[in-house]
Image (cartoon, rainbow, N blue to C red):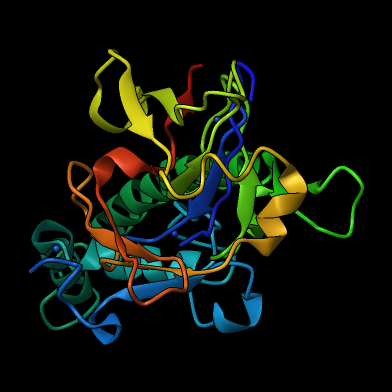
Amino acid sequence: MSSKKESTGTSSSSPVKPVLVALDQHTSSMELPASNLRVVYLNQPQKNIGFAGNQVVTAKYNVWTFVPAFCYERFTQVSNFYFLLVGIGQVIPAITSTFGLPYSLVLGLVLFVDAIFTGVEDFHRHAADAVMNARETRVFDPTLPTSFRQTTWKDIVVGDVLQIKKYEAVPADMLLLAVHETDPSAPVGMCFIETKSLDGETNLKIRQALPCTFAQLHDPASIGHLPGRVACEHPNHDVNNFMGRFEPGDDASVIPLDLKNVVLRGCVIRN
């Protein structure tokens, strides 16, 4: 493949043209039974069910939940709850000294201004989510002459095989299957990625495609005949470690996986 990679991905919610399998993400994975791991099947979408989608939601509220959720959050703060109690006391005729107006107006004004700023901030979160989820990538489709069709990031599902090109961001956690080789007769299955958005490091990191797949996937059509499954750890917050195994279908051959075989969402393919 060329200075692009093809990514064949089985997605989990993870290039030059890279072929990646999108995964979700510690005892040795070679020893653990598949029941204790997350299992993703290649070219068997009917088995990849029950996984979370790839849509990103960072917004906290919607039109229906904003008022009750905002009020609950603010009145669980001790200072606001104290002033609320004082305000309630001021509307009781036997103990009021202000007939309730000053405290009620001041507290209401403070919360109203706070609600405006909170609403505007959450609106921008919704807009940013929409932009992120609407970004496009290419997913393997054996029914098309080009073998890949355009789809949005939010529509990627676990088990999809994706093609990621040079300087493109990775839309899901992926297992690298193959890359675009400069010399197809001597494939190396290696690419460089930038992880600045994950760990702040600007130096490029090396990722290696699976040795059992990168030499086979010189033709996109061959992706549809790739057998096997990936058994890996369940999703977690550790971006510096990964454990799993690739089972090509032959019980005698199990290939261990680690971080060098995985490209996480948000990384950028650089060669």
